[in-house]
Image 1 (cartoon, rainbow, N blue to C red):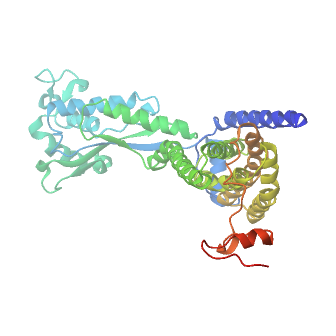
Image 2 (tube, rainbow, N blue to C red):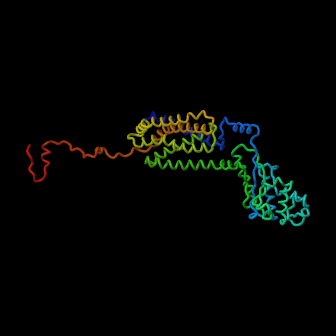
Image 3 (cartoon, rainbow, N blue to C red):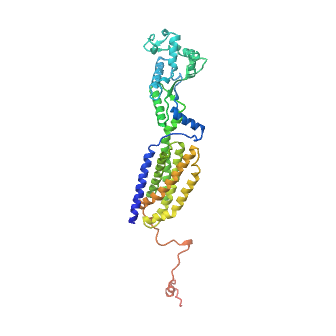
Length: 421
């Protein structure tokens, strides 16, 4: 009826505005991982650290390969080690004064202990200053072993790993330069710092060298979780689309159902930002679960619409009347199941409640408000009928209609006389 048109337009406009607001909020979601309960001592420690210290610096290592792949004693290799130190010092996320290089310390020790005349320069001959000094390749490993075992170089003993400590001439299994990255608190900055230092190391042609810090284990998760979230959501939506299409056997209705599912997830993402949640492994798991829960609130209504008879409005009313109560009961029971988690001090439980509450509310809103309107406006036509006559029940043949006795008496086999009444 014409009176319903303003209501239908209002529903579509309100849902579109809400989806736009949630999409805008979702674009501001950040990546973070805080699984500690609010009442935990560790959480209070983190709060004090953030308030008074603004985060702590991160110790990082610039690891170089074994002597089999990188001859530390060669003049070119010594120059590359200095180039690696300079690349780390000039990295914008590294505290310049924090760099610790065993190569620089070794050269300073050799300058003082062995004399400048015993050293070399890249141009050949004795060096004019310590900055130009290089160790003689023949003495490199023996002097390095002497240095790290002396009191002056004992602090660098853990920066070199010998192939055989009893035979220094065999070279190193690995070595490292140490540095400290600036204090960071945001996941985006931590990812940038990790990528920047890796790029700085990669700019130096030492094959097999890499940058590593303990926190990089977490930074890697920050870096990939958004891509993994989109991948898993895409796979879940594709699987749900195929299943709904097989059940409904109607493409247009299936697309409308999937639209409602997508808008439900967008709403959840927007509410996550409004509610102070972040993208982490817990929220991503719940977002993938939301695909399966949200489709339940829409697919039943769509199926009832497809098999109903009448005009679009009559079929919509029939579908909502038939499935609306069941859908609301299902959403309300889900809400009651997670309600007890709302007062929990556990971060995981609170995230679970907030997201499942959003799934229940927005799944029902899209399944019982938006979807019926879309079905009336652009839904598929009524399914063709198999015919007016109904099939006989129980497998019995159709009954023969009553006919006058005179007509019945005429229906005799050929060649037989008709019986008289």
